[in-house]
Every structure is written in C-alpha cells, then in structure tokens.
Image (cartoon, rainbow, N blue to C red; front, side, top):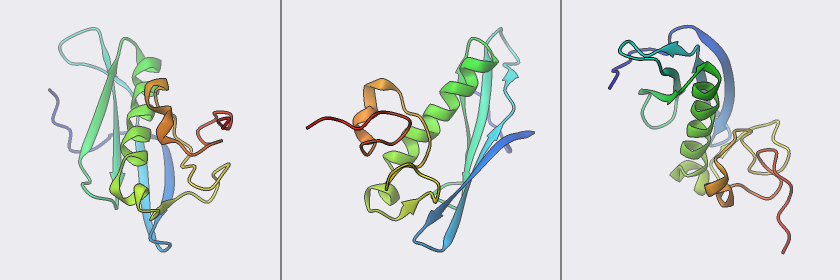
Length: 123
C-alpha cells in the first residue's frame, strides 16, 4: 500500500462548491507505475471537504488507472453526507445534482437522472 503525501503532477482539476460559498478542489494526478509491479496507480485528492488525504486507484495501465480514479472520486462525492444533504454542487452540471464525475454501472442509481453522462431514467 502506497502512502502518498501529494498527487504529484496534477493533470486535471475540478472546482465544486460546498454550502454555496466554500470551494472544494478535486485534483487528479498523473498515473505512475507501481514501484513493485507492472500495474499503474492514479492519485487523486479532494481539498476542502472532509479529509484532504491523497488516495489512488490501481489499473493494468495508465488509462485504466485514470478511469478507475475518476470513478472512485465520483462514488466518494455522490455518496458523501455533504452531497446527500444537498450541500455540494457544480456550476456546470447537466442537471441539478450533477457533479460531472462517472461512477461504475453497479452504483449508477446514486446519480440524479441525467447526470454523469447517463440518459434520464424512465419511471
């Protein structure tokens, strides 16, 4: 298990809003090869919300690590108490409640209809 102090080289960021005024910055780091193997890891961090701890996702290559990292952030955000209380938002969401992060198909029911690039659910 890696213990990361920073995401390193940041390749993407997104700014969300907490409680209509506080900024939450999502940092996605450049994927790197794990020190002891062939797999890759993609570091990410949420700054300004709960813990600022650096986390990471592991994949078989850089792209899978990146995609899994984005999905991991999505699950963490959409299942957070801040989101569930309606306190977390993104100004560019396709619909109210859309934070613009993907989630795995197995948990897409946590997304509001029309969010995350998914078509609205039928009643």
